[in-house]
Length: 106
Image (cartoon, rainbow, N blue to C red):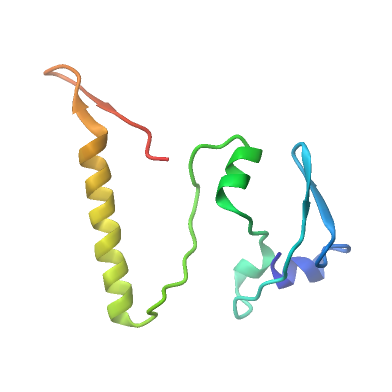
């Protein structure tokens, strides 16, 4: 639970329970991100959240780099581009001479 969300809404402290979909979720911690917009969010385990909300993919992703320098950011961009290229190549296979079938990129 983000610090700002916990402050804004009553009863959102550590140990409190929030009803989402068909179950109750327990707040296990309060995080800070230097006062930015992320503190108004609720974060949870990816697999649990996707299952609970019946999703198969992400809408967004927030990451903190282990190496926050310019070189670390460039390494992240390079690696991300390589992963996207690899997935694109493996998800496209000719189904006919005129069209291609794409797999899900979840």
